[in-house]
Image (cartoon, rainbow, N blue to C red; front, side, top):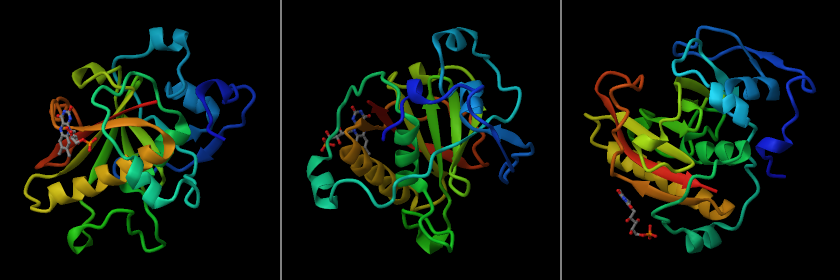
Amino acid sequence: MNRTVQEVPSAAATSATMVETVSGGWSRRAFLGAGVLAGAGLLMSKDAEAKKPETVTENRVVQLPAPDRNGGKPLMACMNARRSTHAPGRKDLSLDDLSAVLWAAFGINSESGKHVVPTAMNRQQLQVYAVLGNGVWLYDPKSHALRQVLAGDRRSSFDNSGCILLYAAPDSDRFAGMHVGSMYQNVGLCCADRGIKNCVKHQKHDALDAELPLPEGWSVQIGHSLSR
Ligand SMILES: Cc1cc2nc3c(=O)[nH]c(=O)nc-3n(C[C@H](O)[C@H](O)[C@H](O)COP(=O)(O)O)c2cc1C
């Protein structure tokens, strides 16, 4: 079933799970679970939206539900359905949608730690950010989780779509364009499977580069706007 914000239980009704935060500067432990999803603002009520902070005061981490790796339409049907919608709209994605598209972009599909997309010499030098109504989040493929890196609704820096994915890579990597192309094609096919409107967008793709925690010499190579 495709969960929606309304169907997720309240914090009081859900026992939070203590998990280790992951590497790469995630120095805190975080309580995960639907309660924290609500606390982190991924599942925002109108009230919460009005009170959302403008700065990140702690590392907020949201565990994504496991993607369904055996489901979906046949690959040929997805290729047949893939299409750009230039103005996808402002409707948020569900957590299940986010889980699916982020896994399609850069998820891990092997015990060896390899990803759904191939990289030259298996360098894996890629990052994916999700620009959502409640902030900008960095995808961690190892834990299949999101860590908030910027607060506030930054979607107007792009085309105001419900969710904008940003694909980042080192500028010096001559394979960067190929790698992000693999990511946006996987996501496009995943969107075709799930009926998510989407469009790869070069325009404004670097609007947040000065604020994102990009490694030295990296930049956002292209954006991908999505909406239900
Ligand atoms: C690398 C790349 C950059 C693109 N940049 C934009 C863009 O900035 N704005 C936009 O509206 N569409 C953009 N598109 C979408 C193309 O216009 C679209 O893919 C093309 O019209 C073909 O349509 P289709 O994807 O439905 O086959 C881009 C597509 C690619 C692959």
